[in-house]
Length: 226
Image 1: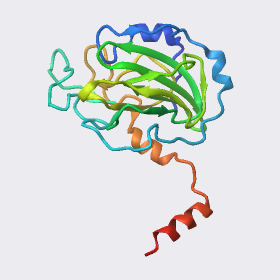
Image 2 (image 1 turned 135 degrees about the vertical axis):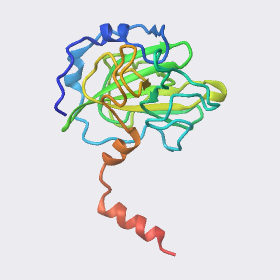
Image 3 (image 1 turned 120 degrees about the vertical axis):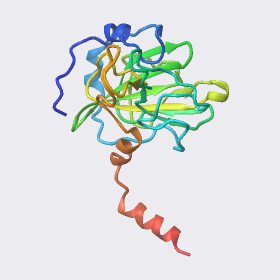
């Protein structure tokens, strides 16, 4: 990935990061646990965290607005609307699965957007971090917990009529902007320009799905016959 790894702890970086609101609340146990990273199996393949993947109002690079069009953040000088770093997915309250083998490196609580979780994955291409917003981790899952691909670690948070799931993929190790759910179109207010190290999460996972066995492929083709 050709990127210098930021040598900052998860705890200190979370404190200075402004991702959704100006005053995020830190959940207990956000201290870095680097020793657990070695215990996580390599992330050879990824999967979608939910069983269905239907887009909600915002996609990767959409202007950061509520579904009714209300702008969530602008650059203070130019007024430019920030751009969404993840993909929003329609969902009811249901289990959320880890996209790949990895270790939980961050958990915070925002008063508006509920819980956020970061999972760090060691891949053949380097470090990848997946970002999950609007979720509540299940009991026993905290910073330092090793997870496997497809393991249920959280549930969708109830946000009433705004209930949905935000998922993002960050190509590189943790830094102070890994939590960001949006970034400005050009650098402003101390934040880097979109997309920074974020990529389209749907495209990334789609390109890293486990291979389908020839037997399964043949079975699918047979089922598709009239």
